[in-house]
Length: 56
Length: 338
Image (cartoon, rainbow over all chains, first blue to last red; front, top):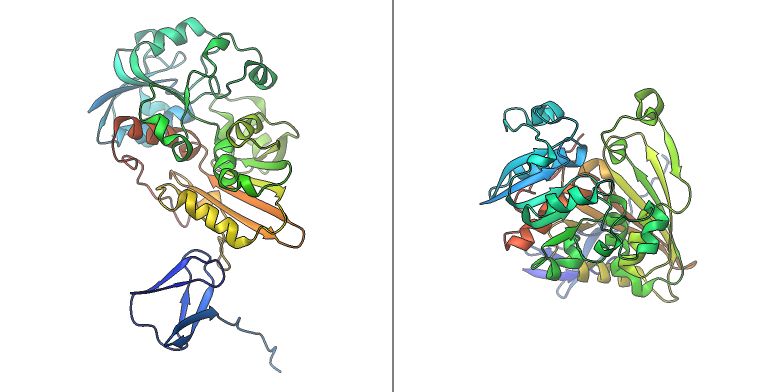
């Protein structure tokens, strides 16, 4: 099992299955959405917020 | 299996003790006393217990010898009777405010002169997250107040970061006023209120100060709820303190605690501690928000005033004292939606 530190709150974030690139996971402590930006080495980052384009 | 009795079993705290202890696998409830309702069935005062017990409230004078007695009401008006009742059991758990403060002068300031001040300082505080080691051998336990518990659990791990006084804004449901009907508790007077009943110097500030060493000022407001406590604690932190520092401190204090959860989330409907989802449970949720630029820290604590704020803390303390699993009888997780 891979364990990374949440970039938002530093809590441990565990992957039960092998992580996949661009996979979105949720931190159990701060509930922040995190994105797998690299698999080897494993790197996670705060996922970008969905932005509202107001139909433009 | 131990034999337990409740003094003042007709009130709301007494009712919660009965609910928890009747479901406890290692406890037999042998008596519930009520001077007002002696001879009346317990499930008359606590209808949620119908079918679970045939117990009848007894006169305090008829309290039998037992292993543990829980005081769910104050004994200050008759210290001799209180002493006689306490002598019926080896273990005494006092859920009233009678023994919470150790300084007689401070007690007098908030509650009036104590009739037996020598008792102050003789009890072990019944807050398992802070007092677990002492509770293992304690024969006299004083359970903290509900808002004090939420404030202490929220603030204590962060004491080293705090720079200055703490202003606590406590909000509490109507059951915090007890089961004695006064005019202020008539539905017509109580419904829909946001009543600032203690604008300054609420008595629980003394308990929070005693447990944390912080200077605490406290306001309390009655809100339109039956159960539940939420405290907002505002203060300043030292320069350089970060959100990560605070989260690490909470993790160090509570990662292994069965009944304290850190709730400070980035999304969802319940981002900070909210009593609504804790009703009936023994959880205390603590959370925070930090403005690193202004060094302003808001700590939030929430719990059910009748459970973690009283009866649940007492039962958890009993479990520790007896060497049982702390969670025995306290497994209810709360309801959602409610």
